[in-house]
Amino acid sequence: MTLPATYKAAIYDQPGTISTKVVDLDLPEPGVGEVLVNLTHSGVCRSDLAIMTNSWQTFPRPTLPGQVGGHEGVGVVVKLGPWTESSDVKIGDRVGIKWLASACGNCEPCQAGADAICFKQKISGYYTPGTFQQYVLAPARYVTPIPDGLASDAAAPMLCAGVTVYSALRRSKAQAGQWVVISGAGGGLGHLAVQLASRGLGLRVVGVDAGSKEALVRESGAEHFVDLAQFKDDSTHDKIVEHVRSLADGLGAHAALVCTDSNAAYAQALRFLRFNGTLVCVGMPEGRSVPIASAYPAVMVLNQLTITGSAVGTRMDAIETLRFAARGAVRSHFRVEKLDALTDVFREMHEGTLQGRVVLDLQ
Image (cartoon, rainbow, N blue to C red; front, side, top):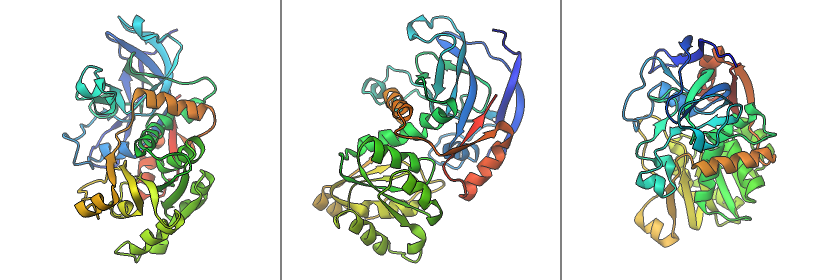
């Protein structure tokens, strides 16, 4: 196979603003333990928007000009570097690139099966070249195999959005037949969470989002939908809490996932829960976040509540999520765009008008 000398990539040319630029880059050579992947598709995630605009105060360093973003890439291995024999990855294999470009495998979190919080992690699209490009280097041991029968464009959003909400649902410890409230249920994360909860794990779902997203949320498997616009004057959140709890047997939900970056959603979510309930924090508010409302010791003790965070997922979570997708239990609602449309996609995302996901066709 003859490989090109250069290829197309989209860079953040003015970090801190919504701006990308398509440029030509020199084709890299895989190093020790690496493979070269010819990417055909990449999902676009709200995390990419936050990295490009330097909106997450929790990230230690600002994004540099020239950074190639993206972390939901699918492509074909076209070249192997030295010492990749033990990885079982072969030329021609279809693989995925995730939020974590690599984890060390040796630190305490990795050894505990929590590679998502590896102490030496490298994040794809943040100080490590991401997937908004036609070719990328990746550790052979950390790429994710794509199941046969799952289209590459459909697989891309599963590598971050899918695995993130699957991992979060598992951390909620909700069992089949129990209630889960999903805030931001019509977003890129949320509509996948609704599907995995209802069709994959047998949970009963209350979806919360803007009224314009009701059709998508119900189509994804939600039993009930709550339109935020109906509670826009509810400054204390009492009315929406009472309504949501009434939908879940009058007692509240066994679990709640916040899949949006809204501080208001976090102010409501803990109160959606019944006794022994679990709140899973997924969405990361941009700028200055506020504490979770109602998380008083007495409330936590008397109701035996749990608050937990969920950061992406493990390699096994990714494999299991893709298996759900290959079986048709979860399907991303997405549209396909070309690389040069990326800036417009980010603007749409920033304005809150984007439903579902966007996948870039990199070919």
